[in-house]
Image (cartoon, rainbow, N blue to C red; front, side):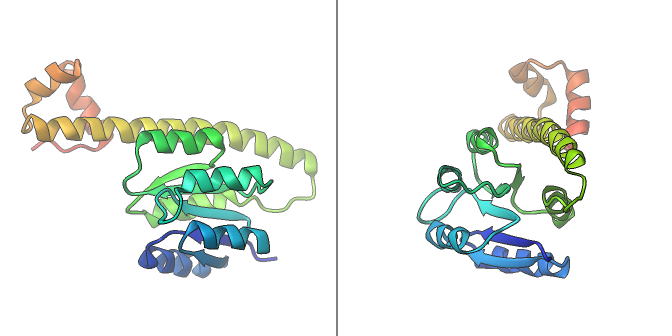
Length: 193
């Protein structure tokens, strides 16, 4: 049986791009452009995964996800956003989102995440429980690590711009000595001009 995914995003281009990529991977895909449509669809269809934007025109994605949970809908959710705060990301993870993706979306990150979060049916229920426990533990650790790296990267990029690339001033403001700062920039993928 083909796995079914719901994409909830107010941007038509993103919905269509994700639909095309996921259908190429063999998934059945339904689209919703707002919370009202998504709410109707989860009542009508059974989804194996929901990809949902944090910013929707009629309700934020985190509130919609909370509504799903209160209605007993336990479909795995991956939240997406190009301008959500770290608070939104942490709130989504805290209430049970499986992951949080930053826009612009990288398909090389998205597709493995989708595959990972759609569990294949197995005959050994004991194995499934062990796998689920391991996935939940790994997911939480990876999500927090990714959120921390994203926050650190944004913090240092902000100070790079504010201090006009002056490493000495960035070191003073951040409280990180220069030698460690260069290493941290390299690890975070920040290029020094």
